[in-house]
Amino acid sequence: MDRRQYTDRVLTSLRRVTAKEREAIRQELDGHMEDHMDALRELGYDEALAEERTIAAMGDPEEVGRELNRQYPSRWLVVKWGAQGAAVLLMLFLLSGWWDVLDNLVCYARARLWPGTFANVEWLARETGQGEVDVIEKTEQRAELGTMTVRVWQVGLDQASERGGTAYVAFSCWDEEPWAEPPGYIEVYNDADGAGAVQSMGGSWGRAYAVPAAYGDTLRVCWYDELDHQYETLLTVELPWEESP
Image (cartoon, rainbow, N blue to C red):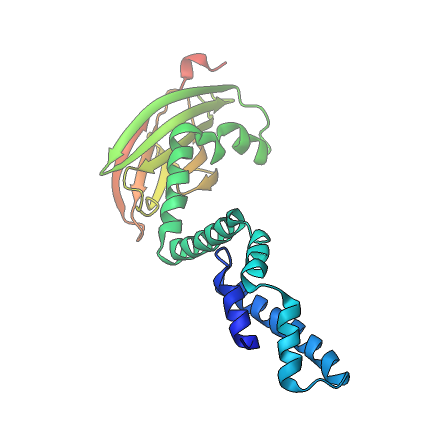
């Protein structure tokens, strides 16, 4: 049995190593035997005898293989394969566009359950320097646009009187199709005189607006397509005038 045959028999006993690890073990065994043979050659042994004595000193190849096998528990191989598989799946996930679907699903959950994470009346008033708003109420005014739902979930009034004040509205929207694009543009106007929002914050899936308003006014929520062409008025928003100071 020569060195190559010895190494092959050792490697045959290994069941829990990857191809890369198997090659590393082969090189380690070859290097160890070559070092041992070099020492014997320096003592005057010829090539054949040096190889024979080296292989004998290495011990039984099956026993060496079993000992090496104990150093590579199967659970670590499973973990390694699992990590490699997860990395491949993640790469395919990102390349296939499913990342956008996941992002839409997150937005869907936020719009339905936590709309205030997009924007709300309190944030808008604080960011625009208005401070506290006189009246803030939650509402459930909704409109359907195909598979999309637009929900006005919060309204507010500040210093509102017959001579004017500020009306606030916060909306969120979601689409039942998880691969849908954001819903174009949603704008809010005073239904009485067509005045638009003077302040706003948020994004495509949720936003808050501040609109000039006088006592008794209502707000109109409109949807625009990507070319800014008005598609339709989605709903008229009632404001809590009876609660206003």
